[in-house]
Image 1 (cartoon, one colour):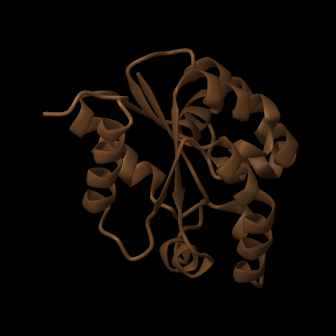
Image 2 (cartoon, helix red, strand yellow; image 1 turned 30 degrees about the vertical axis):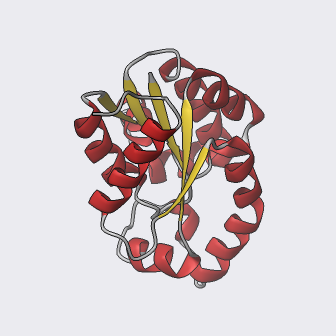
Image 3 (cartoon, one colour; image 1 turned 90 degrees about the horizontal axis):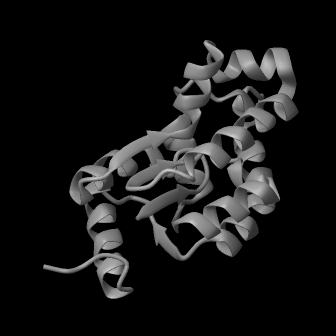
Amino acid sequence: MNIFLIGPMGAGKSTIGRMLSQELSLDFVDVDREIEERAGANIPWIFDVEGEDGFRDREEAVVDELTLKDQQVLATGGGAVLRAANRACLQSRGFVVYLDTSVEQQLERTSKDKNRPLLNSPDPQAVLEKLMLIRDPLYIQTSDLIVKTDRRHPRGVVTEIVKQLVRQGIIAGD
């Protein structure tokens, strides 16, 4: 069993992913951290040196490899759905949960994070709105389940995901 978390930056994929993996006794893997470990550099550096296309090439290779593993909760980067190959890997190799959040909530959660190269802009809200216009339809198309995370404690989101997994027969209930 694999659970793949998709959604925009600031939706809570890493935090919720860690908690969900503990709840389900599965491994947790964060695609962005895996890319950084393999590159020996952080994501802003990769963007600076290789551009977004270079980063997306690395991301595609990592997503393809990691989705072949089993018994894990995998948190993807916000832009992973941009590539059709990533969407196909996610959809065919696990259960995909879209952690949906508003631009306002994203701004609140990412305002002090300097590790987000796409937000290095005088108007991060405009950037997030533009990204959401492009990515939201891809998140919806790729997902098996959509869960809102706005103004919610991660534990409540995890509980909702687990209930839905039981309801849909993905995992056994108590």
